[in-house]
Length: 557
Image (cartoon, rainbow, N blue to C red; front, side, top):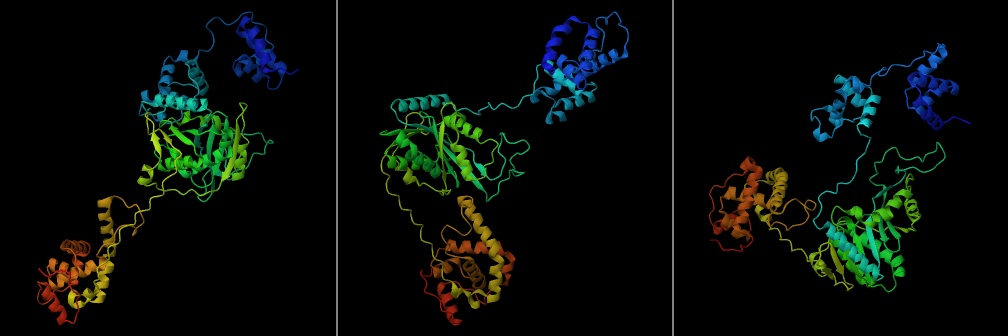
């Protein structure tokens, strides 16, 4: 029968306390010689001594010396490092104490505090010590290797516990009446393909599943979005595996599929449904699409749907997390989700000893992001807020939704003024080539100035450049022609406004913008021999040069 470490430890634990130091060493050496190769290491581990001690006993036996007839006197032998250096333990504790009490300038504060690193730092401070001794000293002082504990929940809402009790009361009321109570949430999105999945499974030795050597997802790669519905009373799960986006419409469709696929049959004749959900995400209490979707589902199924949200920062208390999602994660550990069908089949195969069963289905529908629910639609929802935190707790009655409110058509764009007649060189003092050159030079500054004024008036742009908003009555060319007209003919701005049928402030702004953009480049515009002062002067001047002006919409002042 092979000698094991446990057998030797039991033997040594009985005999060694009755022997002195030399006798113990010789006994251990004899046992090691009897065991042969590897005996020294096995005996040292079983007796809890250093291998050097066992080796010394072997050498003494092999030397054949006569018995000494005495043992070492009390207090003999090598002293422990902490006894030789009384400052060693305090120095070690100063290095491993919590960061907020340590030296902020010490590099060790920002490095891994392994036994080897600590031993090097202590040696640099003058305390010669090994990594093994550091490890022994730390254990004697009550230290151990520990990870992080995720227990800090952040700022707690003052009514957190009250909301927990309210959800519990609502669930008890529905379950006592035989009505369904479900917990819903979206599980973490999963990459579809040969990507590593945490955990291990039994496989033939040396044949691990081959996966990609990185976890960087392909932007065009496939993803699985599992949305779960957990029935608290029946201990059953329904998981709708989406492929598009995790939106409110996707969440509502998942609950709809659960009701038509399992809920209606499990709760025949029930007229109420309680949904417990997190505070954020696609089923958050601030999401308009979620509430509108619940109202639509209530009208479709005839159910009075009550929704209770967990307070912010308490999603781990949602029962679906530890009664459904945790078991799904355990079931597919170590298995790459190579396709959507593999993900669906693995979820559906999840069971527990407590009787959990899961149904899974693939949803390839499209759920676009950015869908807006207008205010009038929200105001028309049959939504009744509860007296206790109505933002978290509300009920949607099974009433038909009002017809959609037609979108308000955008205001008609203001037409640009027709200023082609202004391009005559006699009015502007510019040739066609000069006018084109000035317009090209002003183009970048024109758009930059327009975007700046829009930002000042309504904030950052929310649409693509050039989209939305009303057209100006004057474009870049029009502003440039008006500026050249005033410089060439010295016309007052109110006269130009009267001829164009617009306001003098519009003319002033156009001239100001062009001067700010072009500045000295406008020097190419030459003044006319005689300045004009009235609208009649302008018409006379135009007739003299063979230019036909459109009729003015305002009389000259």
